[in-house]
Image (cartoon, rainbow, N blue to C red):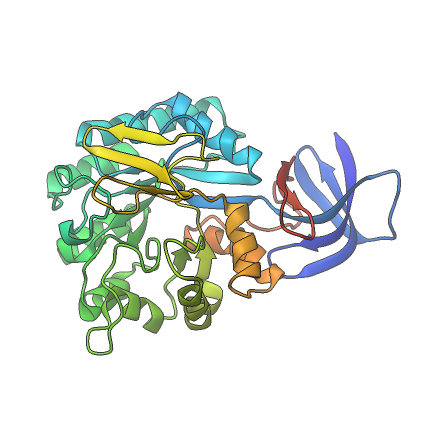
Length: 368
């Protein structure tokens, strides 16, 4: 099956092409060529590879950690599609080993049943975090890794867990090596690591941090912390929540200047679309107040933005050019988690799954 579409601007992940016809065959991009507008083809103002959110906790109804099953995974995916995000890593946070294994099993089953979905794997955020920087994660579940539990997660989560957030200072070097050798992308987050501890972890092979600035040792001129180590290490990718709440837009501008092409966007949405106004899972609670989720301790408990919102904020509030903002939601997360050969670009051989949007960056839709 073959068809063609026309776009005024094509954000390929590497450049912007103008007035292009994209040829699609059997769901795959078969050709891209310049052409005058063809009124017989479906027409878009702007088209990019599908936006990719590696950090999203819930959909319009359900929260993955509280309800670690296929229904929740599908809720996250379908809710994201409605917001213009084509690919997701549903994120399961700090909880019991039983719940983590349940989430892994649900993810494996969902992916087997839905091989063409945009659910590309799972992000396990915790449970091996620093309690000092646990944020909204429940203290009762935060723990140091044991070799036994680590092996259980690795063996059960093989090919399903694509990303894991850890506090590297809570690990032995051997445990970090074991995680890296498993093929799971390892991210440093919810960490109180010193600058030296962080740079040592980066030297071992960790190339990513979790929600820059949030739940990590801050930058100080005498104690640069994890933030300083991230700024000082060119190879490390830094996802950021650009909502004006989780970090000030000025801080986002500083991060943009420091990290350049290693900065990218996440939503870290607790729920999508602000339809859930109150949430409770055990001792974890969250209340929607002034377009942000906070818990009863006063800590931020997750964002409310979509990835499209983050793109718009990056352009309009931070001053990032549109091309880069789109790359921050497509090719850069794909590179950070080792999936750039599969998603993140508009090029021959890549899936014909796109995000289309207007010039005002107000409406994002998935087209496939």
